[in-house]
Amino acid sequence: MIDEIKRFMKMESAGGMLLMGAAVLAMVAANSPLDVLYDALIDVPVEVRIGALEIAKPLLLWINDGLMAIFFFHIGLELKRELLDGELSSFSAVVLPAIGALGGMAVPALIYVFFNQGDPVAMQGWAIPAATDIAFSLGILALLGSRVPVALKIFLVSLAIFDDIGAIVIIALFYTSDLSTTALVTALACIVVLFVLNRFHVVSIAAYVFVGLIMWIAVLKSGVHATLAGVVMALFIPIKPQPGSEYSPLKELEHDLHGVVAFGVLPIFAFANAGVPLLGVSGQSLLHSVPVGIALGLFVGKQIGIFGLCWMSVKLGLVRLPENLNFKSLYGVSLLCGVGFTMSLFIGSLAFEDVGVNRMFDERLGILLGSLASGVAGYWFLSMVLPKKSASD
Image 1: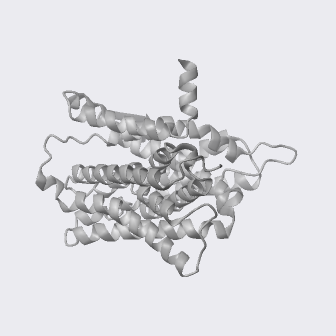
Image 2 (image 1 turned 120 degrees about the horizontal axis):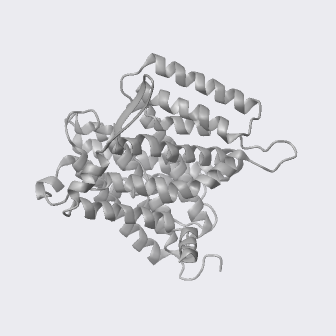
Image 3 (image 1 turned 180 degrees about the horizontal axis):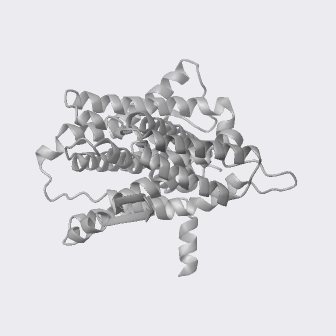
């Protein structure tokens, strides 16, 4: 049994499968007699107090503000490694996925705005369909096994990284509340300390984590979303080993956190946020401008934005398609990028957090419909166009 679990966790699709299982479990709980227990669980108050310092939130917000900070920290580590020592360290390798990410964020947002213009509350969710869920998308792609060319995986991962950068910028600029000067000054002081630790080549992870925890609390209290503290902290983790050593703190930490994020943070987040009660769904609910804008933004906007901009750039001679990558497989991946599940749910929780009108049902319904359609269509299309034999053959 233990060996079988280990083999499952080593599977490339394991994270996406577990994420999908957690979402299904949440849906079952929210649409069964267990719904009372489900709601009570995610709403249970959790409080931490040290003297005058107090953090009191329901469990759902501890997950969204706390656990997701670890997720964003892992994204930051991956981003820094790729830029300095990975696929994104070459300018020519980043142009095509960067162009695709730009189109994949702009077109879905425009589609959402088209359906929701004139409603100031609904317009708060314009960024929801702009996000791509890398864990889900890679998990679905991995189901096709060795038929998937390496170039296609690299394109998807690179595009998702740029997509995450865009999401981080959107959260920082558009989803912040009233700012606290004292808390911001404290956070800036923590950044200075992290900079000093990096400049003096301190490789102790504990030192960075201690300062990062203080910075997370300060950012949480500042009005800027707390998950951004994870990204900032990651940028100061050293990637180069000390002289005479092969130990890279960043690579070691990224490796250690991969399982925590894939098999812990993301499934817990999915379970806490995907529980949509469908018993009251009517035709009017399905046709509301918010779920329609999100679902079409993810399913239609992503494929048009990503594939359309990439195709145009190649035809104009601005970039070249990587070797072993063709327009058919590129279109299939563009479909898969419409799976916005985790990041879309996260941005949705921020978008309608303080508007005073409950749109959480509408945005979750749109995310589920758009992501499901994109995942099924993307898998079906790629299974048709990818070679029947292993790509390495």
